[in-house]
Image 1 (tube, helix red, strand yellow):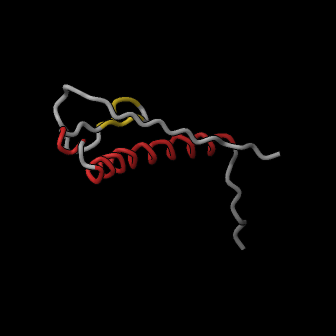
Image 2 (tube, one colour):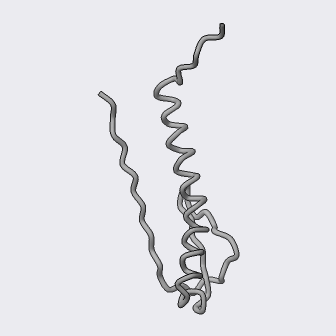
Image 3 (spheres, one colour):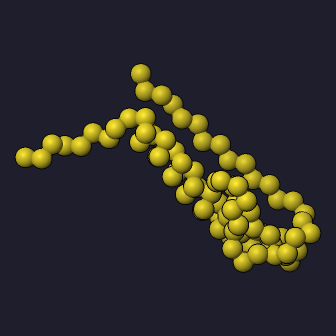
Length: 82
């Protein structure tokens, strides 16, 4: 029987004293953060863009980790050459 897989996402928006950043920073494997200024934090469009820019590298890292683990579990079947 095939196994099922669960995808979990956790998002936090909290006040910070850290310097703002232009690009998301990986703080631990698969976990990224971006510090924006207060004006950006008040804008729904700026918040949405910051969330999407921060989410993208986290999604890519999760896919790499998942597919690497899957490839170690079960070899991919390939058609035999003719």
